[in-house]
Image 1 (cartoon, rainbow, N blue to C red):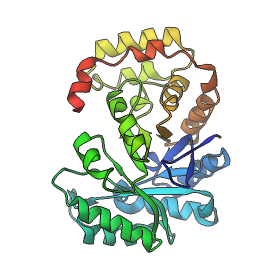
Image 2: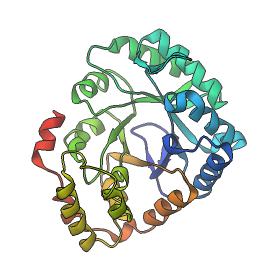
Image 3: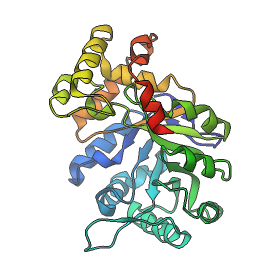
Image 4: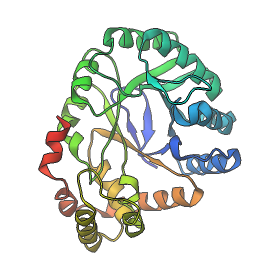
Length: 299
């Protein structure tokens, strides 16, 4: 599997990444998926302390075991919860980021995190304090690089120029092209985009017809518009799953597409689609999918 540089860092990550959020809480099943991903050449795994309230990090850490150093491991911070209390709240304070970093290290069973990401953010946050904390964690060797998971332009404009962040995780697909106008800005700050939502909740896979029955519209599209658009797309492309991956990876600012898998079968479908992406060179039909008003919603 090909790798791409994450921003201007020394990290090179696989074009397909494994998203941890979809992993089963069954340790045996999760381990089978992770092992399959590593054997296929995937070297980037993305999780968050919020996923299953820490259990996801624990499962990934246990599963990796001695293979930890074969993986570039990313996790996230900022959503704080209290054991025994429903829900969570936003906390990007320096003290909490430090506390959460140590907790993630413990759950992951590692002494460093490769990419530590702020799991959101608002313009009102203490950005100087956040950046200083990430830099401190980096100097201490507890993290190698840091970044953010956000699609808020005002947050990115505040965070990226003032920091040495190398990663921006954001939703992006042929059905949601809103972030495109910010790709040049992100690249100019020395960072890369790592995409989530690449297959648009399964709508951009070969199971799109089944998925249509389970959703009532998507990202501004009505169910009727989705049906018409995807039907037309399926007539022009043999494999929508491969199209979804190829569409994202055609962008040089994108280092990797994070795709989850709740079973080995799902992962196998993603890997098979990845093998076909080089035959897709014409994106005209996919380029016509996004509505103009979606860009306005993103501003």
